[in-house]
Image (cartoon, rainbow, N blue to C red):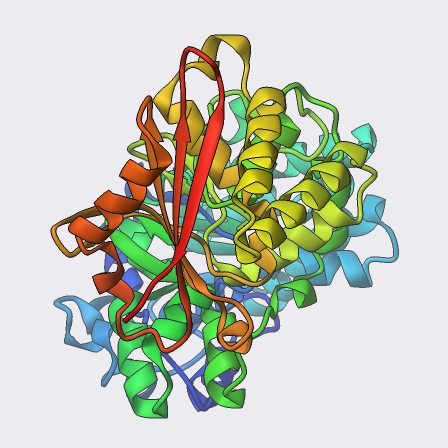
Amino acid sequence: MGRFVNPDNSAFQVTLNSEIYVDKTGLIDNTNKVLNTMQGYICNSRPRRFGKSVTANMLAAYYSKGCDSEEMFSNLEIGKKEGFKKHLNKYNVIQLDIQWFMSNAGNADSVVPYVTQSIITELMEIYPGHLPADTTTLPEALSRIKEATGQKFIVIIDEWDVLIRDEATSQKVQDGYITFLRGMFKGTEPIKYIQLAYLTGILPVKKEKTQSALNNFDEFTMIDPKIFAKYTGFTEEEVYRLCNQYRCGFNEVKRWYDGYFLEGFHVYNPEAVIKALRWNQFQSYWSLTGTYEAIVPLVNMDFDGLKTAIIEMLSGSSVKINTQSFQNDTISFANKDDVLTYLVHLGYLGYDQYQKTAFVPNEEIRQELTAAVGSTKWNELFTFWRESENLLDATLDMDTAAVAGYIEKIHSEYSSAIQYNNENSLSSVLTVAYLGAMQYYFKPVRELPTGRGFADFIFIPKAEYIHDYPALVIELKWNKSAQTAIQQIKEKQYPVSIENYTGRILLVGISYDKKTKEHNCVIEKYNK
């Protein structure tokens, strides 16, 4: 038993000792199925605070020969699976945390030598006489031990991409690390000594420089998580049970921390949910991850369409993105889609893999992304935000002429000539026009089933503003009058969906005339 070779199970025991633990050991059943196969090379990436290290520690505790973990796992999900004991603590495991090695190596150039020396030293102690004293590379050491003993290795690497992210501008560091990975995992010889390779980090395998080095890995990402979707974070069912246990309002937890839709699962940020339940405080815990400073220069990049896309998403809309060109690093950004794809991997955006769209997933991220955008030098955004706040004030004051004027101005400036006379364009304009409302309202509900029909937009104030801001029920009409929109709201009983809302409600009808390009507005108070 060593620090890195055949480690004990103490790290995972700390997780089990925690006040809140959600059983994710079912993931092990999937890794068991690919042991000693060509599919036994896995790169499972996800954002910070989504349990990457917990999963790495869990796998090490289950597979490592350096401990006895039967009691630890027997009452968990994996303990009920066929083959549980067959693989339990039966393998040589090498567990590496590249972030830890980077912090202790002195500098980035020394990381690979430090890893190599540390592991070879332990291997020589565990397998005396099998390695020549002049063994200099880890792949060579693993190959020799396999040849002498017949024993293969499971290699678990946490934060595998830290050198890709943090040392992106150093060609020397990149090349050295890529050579190390290639020697470890690619080719005929590694197949002989690798039982399972499990890499986890924020980024998927880098496409360009490591294409030939790691293209034998199956990738599971925030873009395409496949079978690992329900193990990426807390599922809605798991969060619902926790809310009942802690007597915490599920709907409020959902508004703050839901929003990642992976293979049919609603996935929540685990650490945020745990903190909210433990402290009974709904707030953003995201800034503690350290990624905030990393995204500020990203959102300030002057790629065509990037600013518009971010404004749309902050306003509650989804935008189409092409995730294919992203090179899985932090410097090879060629267009807005690359930036948005990176934000998906960081967790700042959700992704709908079926619609190929990105969106701001929840209230927590909306606040963090708004703060990041607000710290940049987007003069256009500040101007737009100010106009949006003026629009909200005019709506609350029931100043219909001003509302129509602001929307007409935003429609004219925001829409392209091709899209201007388009009904979907008007809907998008209304979304971004009320961007300033996001400080006081939750993400607008689009086409919510209400009464006998669908309202176009419903804005519900956040709990802290419920006594100061009314709910807004907004209906759009194309080539019809604003009064017709108000009448439809009443006839189809749109406010029924929020009749339990205790605050005030305003009905807002907005119309657009295609010929004159004029906008009109009617606003009425709703009498419950």
